[in-house]
Image 1 (cartoon, rainbow, N blue to C red):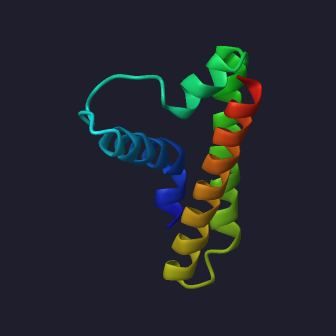
Image 2 (image 1 turned 180 degrees about the vertical axis):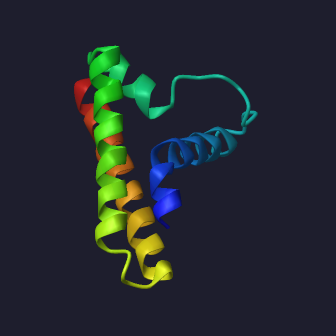
Length: 99
């Protein structure tokens, strides 16, 4: 689970965009601006700030996984995935509020 947390932001973002594209009946390989980084930049945040935000979130996931590695891997994975979904929903709502 710690290994997954190291890559949670890019893995979850790729999966999230893949699902969005499929739900819109588009090719999952079609380029668009649905990635988290693009959403942040399009909302007016600079490239460096967006990258820093995503790096910080990723770092928090790693710290979280290291702090709670004593609990079962299944529970830690579920909590990590749940947090990623919650953060994604917050981001989508933030993006809609700024547009």
